[in-house]
Amino acid sequence: MDQKQVLKNFEKDGFVIIKNVFSLDEIENIRKSCEKLRQGTEEILPADNFSYDEIREFILDERVLRYIRLVLGPKLVYFGESSASFDAHSAPHFHKDARGDSVDPQQNDYPVIRMGVYLQNHKNHSGGLKVRVGSHRHVHLIRRNFKKLFKSKKEERLKLSSFKVGKSYNLPIEAGDLAIWSLRTDHSPNAVRLKIAPNLSVNPKIEPLIPNFMRIPEDKPRVVLFNTFGVDHELHDNYLNQRINKIGRARWLNSSFDSPEAKKLCEKHGIALRFDGLTNAQKG
Ligand SMILES: O=C(O)CCC(=O)C(=O)O
Image 1 (cartoon, rainbow, N blue to C red):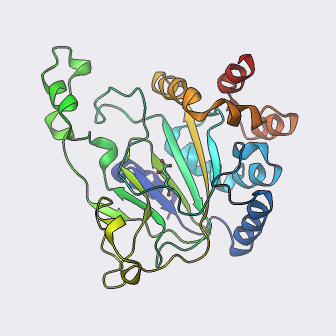
Image 2 (image 1 turned 180 degrees about the vertical axis):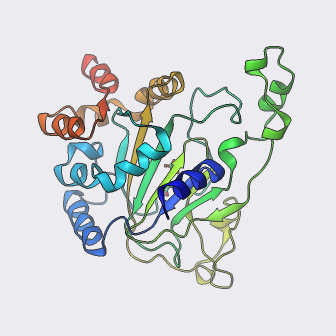
């Protein structure tokens, strides 16, 4: 897919998959590194991704960053939200990750994305990411949003056409691919693929009720690298301000993306670092 098509898909659907960004050898090597860094049965590594030399170098690769810049803009900002995640620990449920976002989603593009490198096959296996196509332009069908149809201030009013439910879709991610989605996109973790209909995307509320014998099992133990990037924008500030408290003090204190090595690599790739979370945690 050429860059124009990547951007077109992202803008239309709220997500995009870029195929074969990494070779299978690279994926196996980073899997081994993540497993080595993991202690016991922890669900995520205790610090952000840029605190680990191997993961930092893996993510801060122009093969990845050129697509992040393509969808967000040239001046990327990283504030410390990222993780290496193990096993299928999150219960399926559709949600948006945008925070402090009261703008009608048809009015602007959200300035924060998440990228995921899934280190195993979810095209033919369960455990991947489910999305609602086009939902980065839709709001949840809840009473609070319906009330916003009648707001007197135009900038606070929601359009009726923003009340839609996009088609549910299990992303056909394979090892080596890069997935990018807007934090406004409805998504759900650990998607189930049914033996009888592998391409049918079942509602996440029903997925937990599906017995094991009907599910296509996972490919390999699930390891995923998630990374959040933003660009300078009021909505990015809103997001960051809400997330720094949620992330938890212990995780901030474990993280060292302010190390000389991390700073140097980020500078090389033109990524601005924000230390709001770290300083906040250090102050206590
Ligand atoms: O685990 C996944 O595949 C998705 C994680 C998720 O829901 C999120 O990043 O908000």
